Image 1: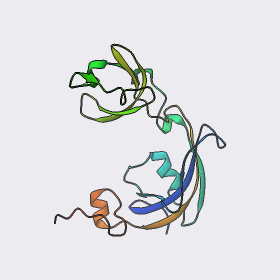
Image 2 (image 1 turned 135 degrees about the horizontal axis):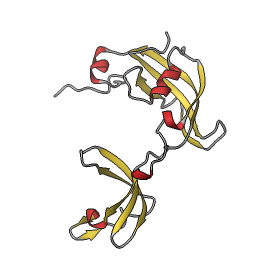
Image 3 (image 1 turned 30 degrees about the vertical axis):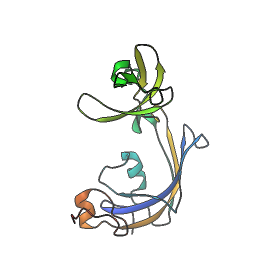
Image 4 (image 1 turned 90 degrees about the vertical axis):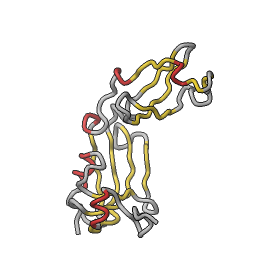
Length: 171
């Protein structure tokens, strides 16, 4: 069996940024592999494309340029938000609103975005809504550790149900 559309695929990998020997960003081991349904678009398109056709136990090594991963860093994604947005009962929670903190926010359309606090002053909070890996080339090395057919229920729900532990049935 090979990685193909509608297969449940399990992979282990090491992700580095900007070069094959760059900073390690993530290590996914066999005791908790990344498990996904191939071809449904839940992962970076180039990540999925590089795994298509791989066999069980086959190793892989590939890179994804920044523009094809999370895109370039955009100055427009760094914005000043009025401090009063962060007020609850007339006070700002400075444990939440502090430099380096990631805060979940919503845009004007209700989409969830994570922003990192860059600066706080008397009137505003400067936040960066770029993806943390925006502007970085990604380097993956790893191995395909599992391939199986997705169940009809998994395909309908668009995600993997592992070991019968997940159900959408109502009690």
